[in-house]
Length: 189
Image (cartoon, rainbow, N blue to C red; front, side, top):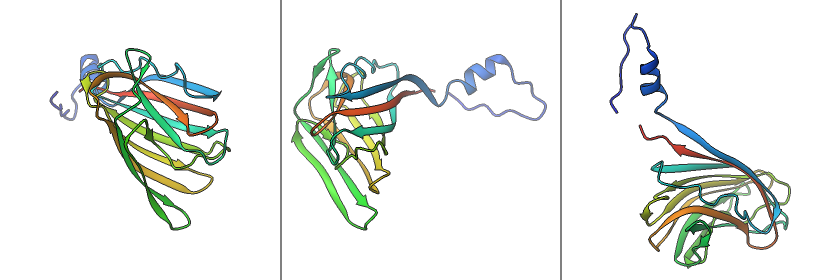
């Protein structure tokens, strides 16, 4: 869509508003909470349908009920079938203490989003999802933070199996998870 430039004194019509202002930005799809469960269950199933080219999830609170466990995710297809192979991911982790490390998965069973998550609920993450809801190699770019322990992580991942992925599952390496997150679609302009 072309960008319209308005001049001084020009009247902004309802059509202009609908076309040029409403067709940009993020569209809220869903906000959900998971409380003290083995994984996110059915919460994030059937959320990607190809309506948008890309999606963004913002999780402002994620808690591990076993302190120090790793936050992980897998992709879902056909509503509830879980992809459990061919994940590749890497992220650079920096700690407030001045150390850094790489967290990586090579042809594994999940994408690892964090090296550890605390049991106090100060952790958060944001993920951009690309090529979901269409037959492709789906990919993510993410950032995560643990506001209590002072570590920060940034990276990405993909699944090497081409399918139409329509959902995701979050879980900890051990123990239960609680989280509250919102999903948005990047509006097609």
